[in-house]
Image (tube, rainbow, N blue to C red; front, side, top):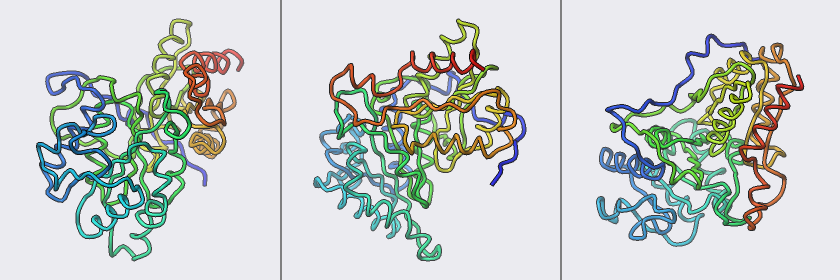
Length: 348
């Protein structure tokens, strides 16, 4: 199906500006604040996962929430991802709003039957008579030396399953706002948090503002190419854009924020405006999510405005290595984005 070009790109969401209503928080603190707000405002919300109670979570995200809200609301579970998600599906069907933490996104493989065959399909198979309002939080990505079984980027798995919403926040403000919106949503939401972002700081609204699912953010405006990036690659794309500007190349950076639902209008509009598209992901290239973005652009009216072929910059088709130098080499870094963007602009 051909997508028609949207109107002006001004409709794209912009990142929040620092000001009186904002504080500087880390990404992990922003997630914790969203969880606390949800627990405080909605008695149906509860958390469950491995070591999220007294220990405070594998990455310290849940922190002191068990002391603030009690063990009934912040529940430590056995080491059984299938059981954890199964319990959450049942609780959601019974009217609760569970928020599951899976220690590493890789471990969702143990729970895929409950995620893909139960949570994602029950609303459809029961003709809308029931819904499954659960959120599954899952730290993912490389960069911590956690090796092949703890460092994957699996967003394409989940985006391929009808019935699931998929969120990848790249900033502390979005981590809070998108998580609150995900908890409100009547559908199952897979909320992917990159491990390298947990210690990143940024301005975060002090209230309970939601960031709507399905609304992209234009992080930077330029004229020569559009870089579409997800997760940790957003900040790398922004840094690459700053370096490119010093060499006379200006780049737009688009952060989809939610992969499902996708704000295709903003992506198409920004690509049409520059005539070049560089799509950056950490996940391996083969069947990666950016292939879907490339197809989206090719099927739209933006295709006729391209001045160069659509380019994808992805992780290698290899398991993530343990050795730090090999781990870095397996996924795009800032110099890789700069080099690929320069070739795209200067060669076409």
